[in-house]
Length: 343
Ligand code: AMP
Ligand code: MG
Image (cartoon, rainbow, N blue to C red):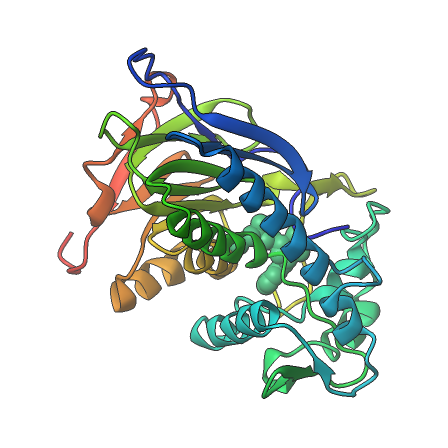
């Protein structure tokens, strides 16, 4: 099954609390959506809530997998132009992905799957497609052509959905909802590198989320959050080196069909909703720094951290006080993006 990333973790949660007066949390690490997930839930008798959360995410994987022949997305992708009835969760996720595709002017392109397949990102059999092949495959993409009907999805023949850029974020929101219903007020979900923080740490302080330096296992900085999601996108999460010696990453520019290459190494988005963070981290990575900054100035309903190839870290003013560069990365340049243009 392939939903998005490999088992590489993008974000680490630094659990240096060490305060023994709080009881041990319930914690489980498991494989789902083609990645490792670790759920940590605090409180009394939370084992059942944790088990339900795990069950929920495995259920969502079954709905959204592009390779599981039993999944709803598989059915949509092989429907040959016929409408397919889907569950509420799938309908909502697809509706959200299409809405974000429109809002990002197609930088998020949920129908990019045929192009990804040509590069081998769906199977691991990597290759550089010819320009002609890519041009032909781009003709089979275009979110505007997907039609949502009451309870169903209709895709023109030859088109395919890939929700890898938004599924884990949306799963985070549904899990946060479920845990809240179960009375959980403090939990931290690592959904394959997407972080969904529920409430605060049991001692009332905020969670410290470590951000992974691109192409490294080190943490370059950290962000303090509560009741929020933190999601990162970057080519370094999955890439291959072509016969030409160049590196090709898994995030595709929907205008060209080629992996994105624009001076950005990673984009981290923090906001309350996981699905917004996930959609935007991918879309802003496609846009590149300049467009991403303009996009943020227009909306300001999220915060972001852009890591540039030239070791600049651009962060929005809303998280200026919450973000800190790690000791080993003090030589990186931190620049704050402000709402006004006078910076
Ligand atoms: P993320 O890790 O959330 O940035 O999602 C990356 C995944 O989304 C890739 O592995 C592909 O499955 C898919 N993808 C690649 N390029 C795009 C794009 N431009 N729009 C939407 N999904 C994409
Ligand atoms: Mg994403």
